[in-house]
Image 1 (tube, rainbow, N blue to C red):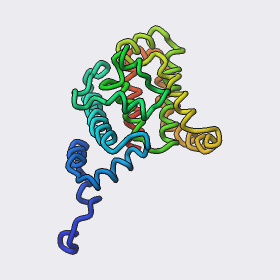
Image 2: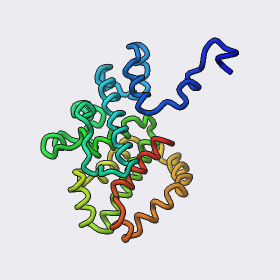
Image 3: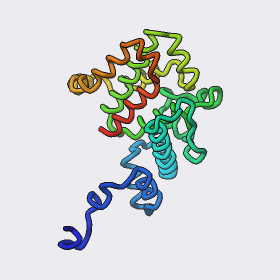
Image 4: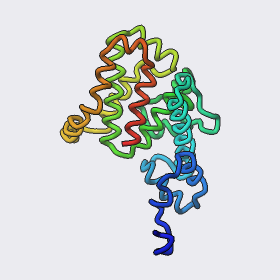
Length: 232
């Protein structure tokens, strides 16, 4: 229709079925003016300069793509490390999450946060450029981690050790969420939360079932939730 009746094809038609991988390649090919506009939309923070934003978006989205593929094909991802070129910069992450979710000790002492599951979670939160969505994601994840910890501390500790996630990730996410959204915004979140109850009813059931906790990968389950947030 557009070929026959118009002199161009709109981008929302042309790129309707473009793959995630090809989208990332197109991002790299953008000229500086268009790329600058896009990176400011994806990362609205003023704490990063243009080059830092470009590098973080490139490595962060490619890291998300890697983990998405590993999870989708049911491969071992608990200890998965993204490719060296997709490692997230510690200095950039500290600027995005100052004094909250991630600390320098994570990089220097525990060797986490640059190319692992923790970096995957941080990248997803970074690209959710919506205060309410970020708040809800952090609160929900924090609640799920707390639920598992309270049901079986031994299982929780084992998962944290194998995945190299911070043992206090639930407290970190909860603290970050509270900084994101002051009490004046929480009434609107309550209405949003009410609409999400049906979506997460199965999740809550699974988390309350100890037998399923033992037979199912907790981390796989939680990261599935993260993907849902990106898709929604």
